[in-house]
Image (cartoon, rainbow, N blue to C red; front, top):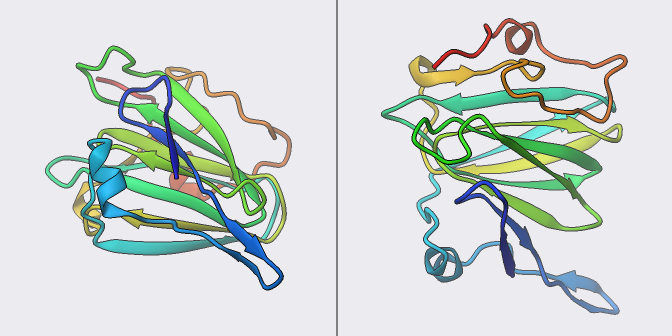
Length: 177
């Protein structure tokens, strides 16, 4: 695994190193020691799978509020996504800044999203599957989000025409500190 910190401190793109042979490949996707060596949360308690029928689907921008902030490890098992994180840590030098990375079944990259970040993605292909590991159990009373197109962040999305997004995700108010 190769860990590359993004410009948002604590968030990492993780490149996997598959070993190929005539059967296919084998790759390690998790190593508690390697994650701990980078100072990352190694306590994942829940995994989720998101299936997305159509290209252009947006899920996000989600986070859990204190005291149940969560770190996430995100990978794309089928298709591809434009994965976006926003730093919502008020004391951070990159507060309200965002970063993106393309995750796909072909590039086999993962994104580590630290606590205090909003996370979301847009599918770049039909029939896309995204797998997440979370460091906290889902707490509905702490589930929160910011709008994917909130001008406070200025996220640039690759597909703007025909975006598919839930009513709940569209209804988040403008961001306020």
